[in-house]
Length: 446
Image (tube, rainbow, N blue to C red; front, top):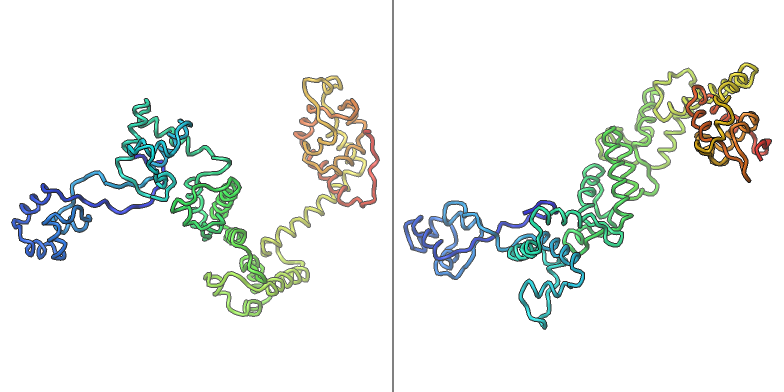
């Protein structure tokens, strides 16, 4: 049986008791006495009596082992999970559009035209089917020229076809299981439906939006787990289940609190109202919003009042803030140097074209609209406009005008790959940021 579909575990099939089985039982136990057989097998007297007198046609695997003292002979189960049958029936109906479910039902069961078909075997409301139905469907495909291997491949391909923009539940099921293991969120929260409705076959597919969201959550959860970011995992959980009003995640302020306890000598209980142990062991995960705000405010105030603190001792969130401040200072200094005479000469050297104008206006290289050029150079529009205004002659020499300005793709590629262009870009980004809103840029390419 193929394993390309996700099946639920089913009970072991019951074993049929034939006259031959009874004869073998009497030979094994060396008696035909019901009381003796009941005593030796430790089974109820009435059960053994009904078996011996053929009033019971099948028994469970456990009763068989107790009665015969050995495992039953391998035999084909009378009933099997209906996933394979339903998949083959779906493929047959897909390939034969003129055939309805009612037609297929009557053909399989040999029913007359006036027989009302029981379509529950096709929609999963009846989860198990006679094993003979699976054989009948496979024979139908075999008679049509499809061997077992090709049939299985077609079934897999049919699984991947989204009906009306929907995705089969069996495709999202392992994704939901992975999210539940990592984040601890029940699949119902993602499906917006009771998961039991899907597991029982009442619902068979989910919307493409739900599937895409589940895939995104899975990737985010796996990345956070791989990088050991517990805070991100908890945030994902809140994004799915919803935030508890008036409370914040403890992990959002854990580093700041540890920093305060270490350098201000204040105890965690001062801020939390209880010991930190409760949160470290996971017994509590949230704190009141006002407590979180106080922790962050005290952390920022202490850092401002203690400017000689080493960067390495700051919480990571505050390290990033301090680094951004240092970078702003460096960029400001770089901008100042680039604005001096030597810097301006160096800037012109970086922006200067490497080829003759004829090469840049060659149609083979292509052109980019002027207003789209900032995206190519990864600059903000205001910063790019400032750079062009300060170096108008250069940009005019590598552009062409046909109702609007276009810049040569060759020049843009050359510029983005030039050494030190990132310094020029940083200079104008800083200038654009510090330029007042009322400050106007003199246009030169109109």
